[in-house]
Image 1: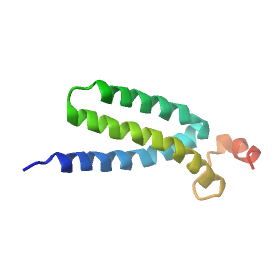
Image 2: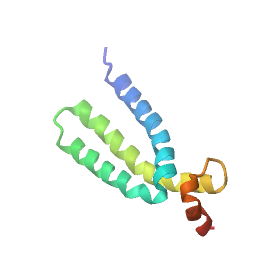
Image 3: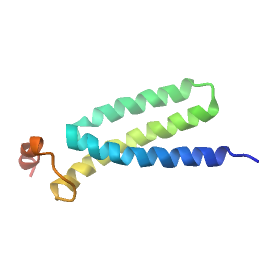
Image 4: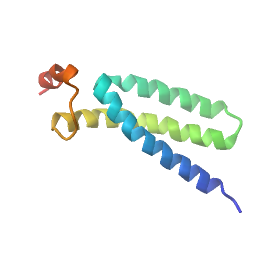
Length: 101
């Protein structure tokens, strides 16, 4: 039996599941301008994926890298969801939302 497909599928599922709340918390605490952190994390894990000799770890690092890249888009969309009132606004950053209207 070859379990690698199931293992990689599960790792992808967990990665996507973890990045959803990470994006929400990052936007809440740091604002939508935190996207460079996701870019750097994505570039770092992509580079690690390229130099890793273990192919399974390389695949998982690649999934994490592209989840970071996708999170760049999601942070901006989360910002819009907060502006629409669908998610709670951080009261310490209320002026940021008011100036972008």
